[in-house]
Amino acid sequence: MPAPALRLAITGGIGSGKSTVARLFVNLGAILVDADALSHELTAPGGAAIAPIIEQFGASVLTQDGALDRSAMRTRVFADPQARRTLEHIMHPLVGQLASERGRDAERAGFGCVLYDIPLLAESSGWRRRVDRVLVVDCDPDTQIERVMNRSQLSRTAVEAIIAAQATRERRLHCADCVIDNTHVSLETLAFEVKHLASCFGL
Ligand code: ATP
Image 1 (cartoon, rainbow, N blue to C red):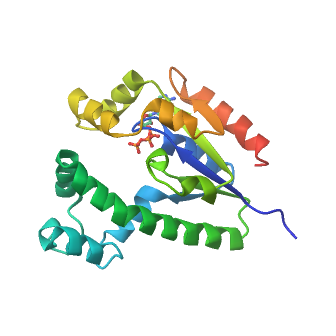
Image 2 (cartoon, helix red, strand yellow):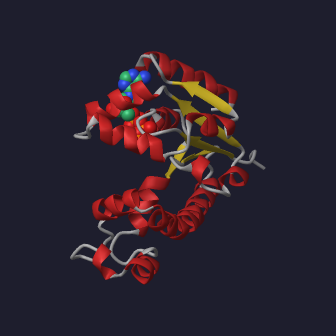
């Protein structure tokens, strides 16, 4: 009987390096369940989130093809905390359920480590008990801002506003079983640290 799979959640603020660390884990044999990708799937035309979204927000929040207009919704929830809570109330359980299904499929397929990339883990209830370990990719805000501005068109003010709307660094660290420091760290050093951590997890 093979050992049960390790269920590892990875989280961190915007631009902290979650996806980079996740890719390194995948290169070492983990399988990734990506909450952002699941959220896209659920809000694509005919996705399971579309009907409850229409019920709460009306059909005007959809694009012509029936997908959630993500950019319009982002603007709306940014300006309206109640709308944000309503959307989270719809999305978090659906993403959690689909992630668990995908994780179970991966375990049945024999993967020894299922890595759940959950950007909003610290903001959502329920994730902690679904996984064995929480890995936080920690990064100082200036580095986050610089990395996000380098890879997108967002202004410093826009990135600062996103950071302010996310869980605080302290709150996130409070959820952590292990932390990877990704401030002032080269990609080579990051890869080395991930390799070391992954070996502690049997990868
Ligand atoms: P998001 O929350 O927006 O999905 P993320 O936390 O997944 O972001 P990444 O996409 O992994 O972050 O990294 C953000 C950017 O910073 C990417 O362009 C990535 O290549 C770069 N990056 C990450 N870590 C480092 C590092 N140690 N040195 C240099 N660049 C880095």
